Image (tube, rainbow, N blue to C red):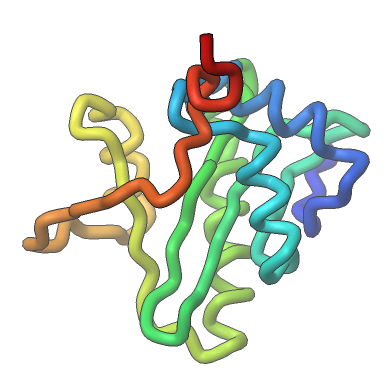
Length: 148
């Protein structure tokens, strides 16, 4: 496998959105195109893809607000899992975040996703004793975009 980890480019959009759908990362409250647009407005260098022989097989979207780094939309093509792609992408994203002084990375995993939690444990992540809370400021759901 000829794998290249690189920064996302606009020409990757359709393949990345398709990958996110294939990996079950898109939910009614997440509009992937809007999420990509938001990321492109802020540190595109923290949005990486894994490409193998011209095909996008992975993605990871990171961010840093000066205190903690965050990782979202980590996806690996289901047919390409267990080949080290996720590990390589996370390593590259960690390198990029560390280069700007980021002291710690946080990420969120759905509690039901045991396999993903085990992957992160295997690359050195540990569960923090915190409560994760959120509040949606913009409703990206399909119902909000197309009211009846």
